[in-house]
Length: 450
Image 1 (cartoon, helix red, strand yellow):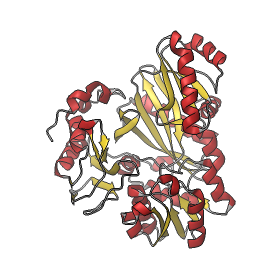
Image 2 (spheres, rainbow, N blue to C red; image 1 turned 135 degrees about the vertical axis):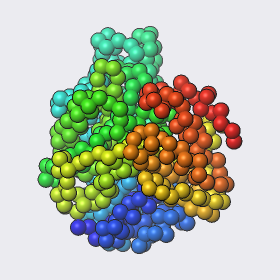
Image 3 (cartoon, rainbow, N blue to C red; image 1 turned 60 degrees about the vertical axis):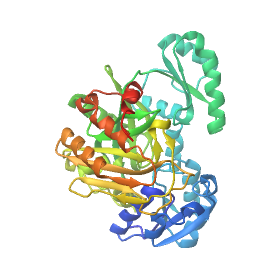
């Protein structure tokens, strides 16, 4: 088993990983920027190393400093968490080159699945349903041929993209050439790779993802699915497990996800993401890391996914077989952000003057904040996640409403009331929503009193 792990991340995910390590008797090394010297993950780790200045580029994205910190502190493995370097194949390869275990898949797998066009080709080979479109990157003329075959609306997407960058929607043929070059230009600026591919636009689908675990001995299993359809500008806001899919589609999606992982020789925890419409489900991407929303899966399965990551990285076989996995009740997660929804969701870092977190059965709060903690302005606005587990979906919704009503974060504005408005919306309660829900209902969701 691993003896000493460096966590190449910050905030709630760093805290989450450190706690899992402690439960397994693994020593931990935290890294931090100058802005994060008072962060919770720095305080609870066995050792902490400053790796650079406030900007992520000088610290949490500084591969050389992170590798040096691992070597100098005797860490045998690095857990990247999510974001930052978690899906960076160059960093994973650097770890391999210096003899440090990267807690995630091999660099070659990260590279292949990080290239969206390559990932699509691999899924076609694996006979996993994909969104109709090009099989890989396309030139302008090749793109026009695809346009003629699948028609509009369609998406032009950056091969190396993510977060909606390098993406253009084409509603009419006359828009195609301008959108093609705009997508390439943005992709080049954001990812230093201007390759693009084309997909049919699935209008307002459900966004469903399947959690998988795989060890180095060919064992792969799934831990069920999550519905991540409540999004704003392609960023998830609320996630839940399980989804409301019919069993036939759910089981077919599980089979496709396991098949996808096997086909690329995947190892460790990962997520296969699909969009779902009235005709079926389609692969869109694979996240080669732990997901922000992994707690909802943990709540309904009772399996600690981070601990499983650590065990797999330490050379252990999967602890469970597929027949061992059972699903209990329903779980919902909301992302607490230091932002002001009524002012275009403007980030608002600052001092936490008071923090009160409700306690109780089926309540979980993953965060790195505490009373008198100063949230720095240099990173993502998410400051915590609330997870509620109930015996049914309605029970989980009601529990989450109660938690948000009692949760106190004074000193900064947050999106708590906005989240409550979503949870109160009759269409959300009925399960009648898709990825366009927030955009379609935004005006009403912002009517809460401040």
